[in-house]
Image (cartoon, rainbow, N blue to C red):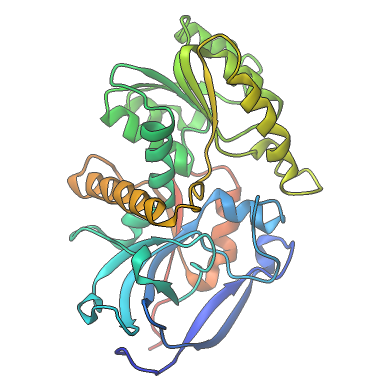
Length: 351
């Protein structure tokens, strides 16, 4: 495929409504030729993030109406270019954050949103740090700005974002207390993390024992009532970064409500005279100034991919599934038994 009007057939995984993972649908359609400024990217790896787990329940903050193709990020090779795009991109590997649409054998994207994947980095390895790496990098270095020698708490330190956050923090000389179920504790200790059982009713008291003077930052994707305890762990000058509401993932009702309820409380805490700050992290913040936003995303993701290429980050691949088995991939990711990212790859070609 060159920059022509040719179409090709694409296989997509559609989320038809609020269904169990096995309710995902496999469809095929013609993929239109890329328009001006666009490319066709052949998917080599996509994955399951917490966002899709929320979308399945209709609980993700600003998901599109059903039916749609999920897939928050993608790694692949450019197959075709539209008018005004350098044809030299064809055959090169890129990563992109898509929010939706990644669960497909190929997709049309704006060329400006592509970030080059360094030579020698495998697609599945790169996939583990696209949305997770970007999220972790920005929370650690842009939101909380934790300095070397600091100490942080990562809730869910074995998850997709959590495991990347742990590695970035340790690489920067930051001490980490991480919560996870006991079967992940040995692996966390190997990374220099102090593990705490997140099922322990005394979890917050246990964290305080390891950091009696408070911590520099808490990264909390759980939300709900426990967010108050996360706030109390901070020392003066510390930052709470809230980036989700996993505690309410099974609660029926408006998907935006848990976040909207939490937001005023976080903002109010910023006015208390204790030097602490509370931030809400959303990957899509700042899109009103789209050029600056795109530059920042490209800059940060380039840094993370380079750390991966340099061996400073180890890709945490929980499992790989072919695209046609995305339902099984989603079910495994939701089982809370895995460390790292569940990755989706193309189906093998039919012989």
